[in-house]
Picture 1 (cartoon, rainbow, N blue to C red):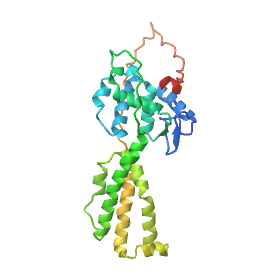
Picture 2 (picture 1 turned 90 degrees about the horizontal axis):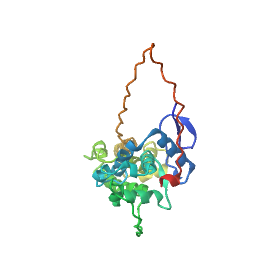
Picture 3 (picture 1 turned 180 degrees about the vertical axis):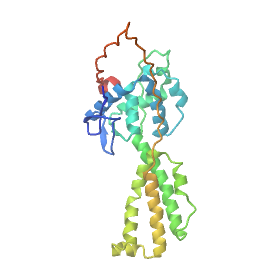
Picture 4 (picture 1 turned 135 degrees about the vertical axis):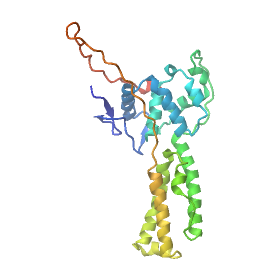
Length: 275
């Protein structure tokens, strides 16, 4: 049976995992339900901890909980939480007004006993601390990087369009999840410089009249490199090894091949089941 999946438009198609755009998607959106069904069919409990570890490293930007997550019993972790973590890693902008997802993430960080093998769940009422959404953390950290780049650009212009700053080398210290935001931030400046260099608008050309034409071209090249380099950063994902199953040899005289099993049905998982 060929595996089915849903794309960002919520349509069942054949292929790889669900793909997401920059569009904000509410946690109760039917596309989330369908994507979870795909993950539940494709993945199993053995994938949960590795996905959570990657989420904390890429989105939460910390390895503080690495050993903690590794010690967890994956059977006590709601699989849907891990599936949404993987969706966020693949571009999902999650809208979670009631903090359903964030509550589960905070629980994984702050309540390790609950997920240990010998823990018996006890219901306790606690005051909910204020939480910052994953995407807000990404935007906040991106702003810090953009501030550093703005300073490098100012220094570049002040020094007559000369610099020792290596954009490619610097980009290797930045996690790819911030790349797109940084690249898009400088698109408007790049467009403005292209107009000035090509003399397409007198007002824009006048605004850069304090620079020599050779300096203006260097300025354009510098900003363009920032846009291209950060716009092409990609998350390096570890490939999961496929387990090979040994095929049983059948003798024509004594044994016959067993009948094929009925096609496996896609599991249906609701938001309430995993949250």
